[in-house]
Image 1 (cartoon, each protein chain N blue to C red):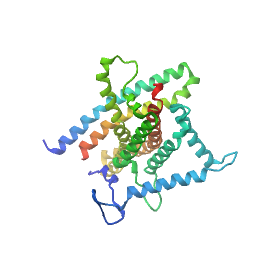
Image 2 (image 1 turned 90 degrees about the vertical axis):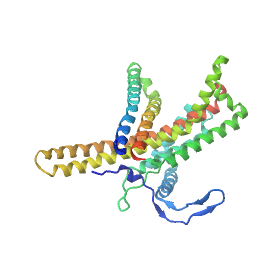
Image 3 (image 1 turned 30 degrees about the horizontal axis):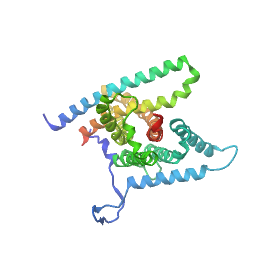
Image 4 (image 1 turned 30 degrees about the vertical axis):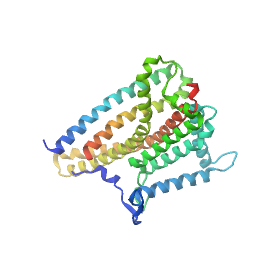
Length: 74
Length: 266
């Protein structure tokens, strides 16, 4: 197999790591929304925590993206 | 189509300064590169904005209220994360937040006549430096506050002693990996955003050129228009991500400072 073909396959496989990040983000936002439905006045106080949790979870997906780019372009 | 989305991150020198021979490090290239230039411009913009918005008007104008809302955001963050001692760390956190915010936003604008600025935070060197500065600041604060009690950070209270042999190395490793995750999070978000924008933009041109061959390929115009719409939507997303990543960097710095400052209230 040529190197370039292996790089493409490797980059595609590396992106499978984003599955976990996607599931985690869905759980996070779903729980925030159900909590906001129960107690709308407290929702605004929790919003910074929502964004913090979102960025932390998204970061793990971005690590998978960085590995994919390293495979593809470096 | 040979698209190279990584070409936009190339560093080239703007002002060449001959390499200086530093004893111990060898030849150090001190020339002003485009990364250094735009970091300097970001620093000047932050200082200029703060000076311009520091008016004392009771009814604030737009610039002053923008400065006040940024200050209020970071003040809220430090006081909710660190507690009543949060004010002491506000300058550091605010510097991190505003500097990273301006550097992130520079990647999304185009200046008429100059072209596109360079996103300094898309360089791992820059984000790693910022993360290491935060990490070392947290360690220094920890040692000044707690002396050698700083190492109690790795020993959570209320844990049965046989479990500590497993827990302390895990805590230590997760502490040491903090600068890595901090830098990679910011770097990956900025890099990924710009690469995706470049790729979708290349779809616009590529599908348009394909559609010009006529016949059924005219559907390529639809795809080209869709790609253009996607580029616009992604740019809007990138504005949100720029702000969010700066906020998250500052918030995590507050969390780490809280860990070492409020060590005994764990």
